[in-house]
Length: 124
Image (tube, rainbow, N blue to C red; front, side):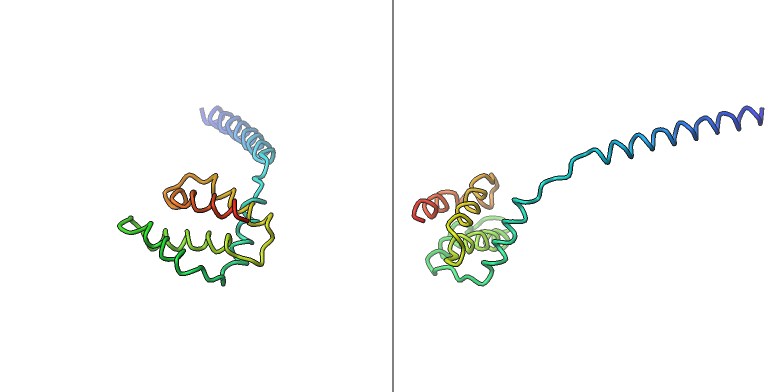
């Protein structure tokens, strides 16, 4: 009986090792995500951190978020995005890229800005 138990345990160990090798090989075949869009947007946001928005733009952002849940967080995110679009030191291509990426985002944070973003991109 004890010999049979050892044989079953050894067989299970071999099966387990085989499965682990298969999972390991499959995990290595998964393509890595391309972070180039995220990286570029992050870089542009970092370059625009010190930009001051016009007073009327800041007031408009605050007005959009009046009575909204998490308004401070939304205002911060929207302001950071708009700073990139108002950064005169960036190329037109960079601003268009950033604005078009924002237009693709369907979230309660950025959707209220879509009309304003379209106007800004049209007037570049």
